[in-house]
Length: 109
Image (tube, rainbow, N blue to C red; front, side, top):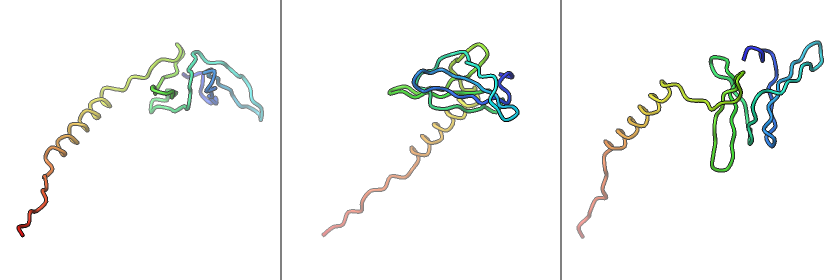
């Protein structure tokens, strides 16, 4: 969202409201309520492309959302991220399958 460049984005965990505010000449200016409401809001981040993402956590569900001019929408991982995740699981499974199985030595008395 280019209109948020140089703004401080913050939200309220209980109500889920998200705001942006600017700072110029030693004073806060231009408080703006952003589109969307995200209950159980816990934090914000920024992607490599400069998009703002928000995270929420509630008992039993955790999610990542992208903030856009059209509101708050669920973030979908890029195909490369999914491929890397699946490849990692495959490699970990392969390593576990190929590890040697050790048995305790039996001693005759």
